[in-house]
Length: 107
Image (cartoon, rainbow, N blue to C red; front, side, top):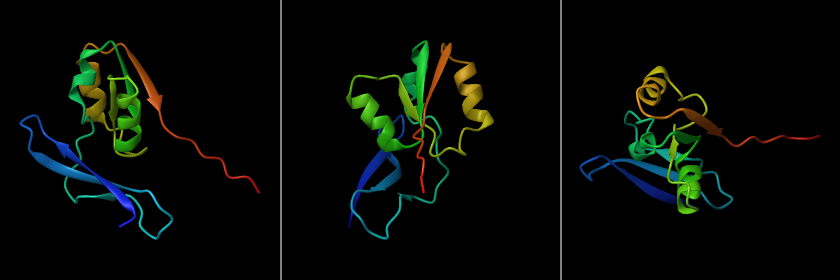
């Protein structure tokens, strides 16, 4: 309870991951299946000259639902790994937009 759950499908249409995001004030944080994460979960984004890399699934879906179809997620700020960079470098992508959220806490 208190979160939205999004299934992540592979290229064959099978669910291979689940992503849960808290939507209410509760003790629940984000939730993932304990499986290896695919850092590019929208491989269609690699067909564009520009890609928007988001931190989370919800951020990516927000961009995508607002017409930015070249958005993809990397599952957290620490998840931009060499294999993801190699996938981007070997695609037709020429421009990478990092679309991470930044929060500032003030005293």
